[in-house]
Structure formats: structure tokens, C-alpha cells
Length: 82
Image (tube, rainbow, N blue to C red; front, side):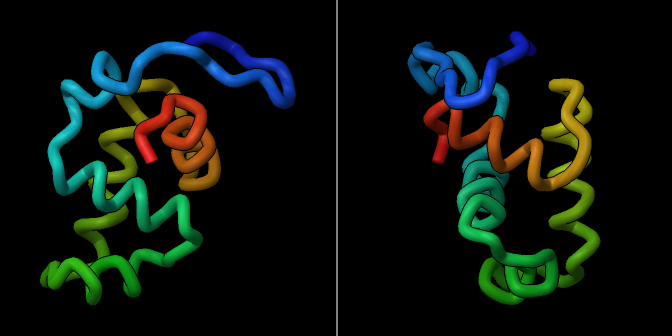
């Protein structure tokens, strides 16, 4: 992942980024970016367990060198995914 300075947005089309994300992962990213917690997201998406949300976020972040839901949410917004 390219390092960004404060306020700098990446100007790449989202398609190249979202190609490896499932529709469900994109849904989760959108809800995280709105500030929802794991339990809220799990209820909204009718997932059996809130750990499913956390595992999804860990997988998304891990592939990109991101740690924590805030970094993941910021990345998703900057990349134009959500």
C-alpha cells in the first residue's frame, strides 16, 4: 500500500481494488466506515456470529498491511470503495 500524506487521496479507480473483495466484504466495509460495531453489523447482515465480521476485517486488512478497523475504514474511503 502506498503511503499517503494527511488529506491526500489516491486517484485510482475502485475497480482494481475491489476485484479481490467479495460483495459481502464490501458491505462490511461500508458499515464499518459508517461507524458500526461488529455486533451491529452481524445483526444487520444476519450473520450468525460477530466474530465473522472481525475475521473479514482481519483478512481484508492483513492482505494490505492494515491494522485495525479505523485504518481499514480510512483505506476503503480513500480508495473509493465506500
